[in-house]
Image (tube, rainbow, N blue to C red; front, side, top):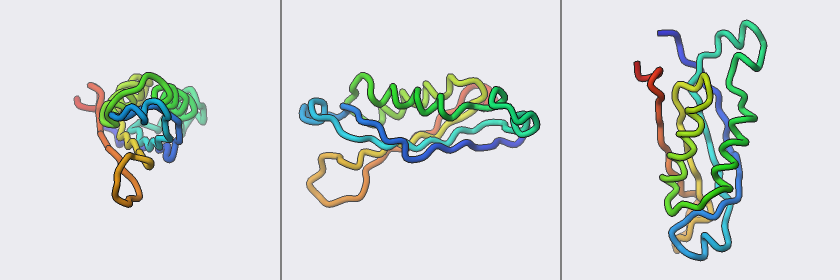
Length: 126
């Protein structure tokens, strides 16, 4: 099996209305998304053509649409929706998604709350 390469997109900040509490859904807050896409970049490196790779701008737009879209209770659910969408891009063999909720409604002082999931498509599992 050829070596896998990685395209990373970190710190994608999108306003959304996710959370268990009514005030989270009403007021909304920023969510920060980090992605690591497993791809095979050899062809793109040889051709120097964006058509031979995963266009990270298009990935960013798709992820932003999900985060800004229909509310969910849990950031685990949000991460799963993002992973499913990113895996639908041709050439993405696996994805690691981290959803950060820096304004989570926690009484204690904290820096960040996040959930990270990793998902693979059938081609990557074979």
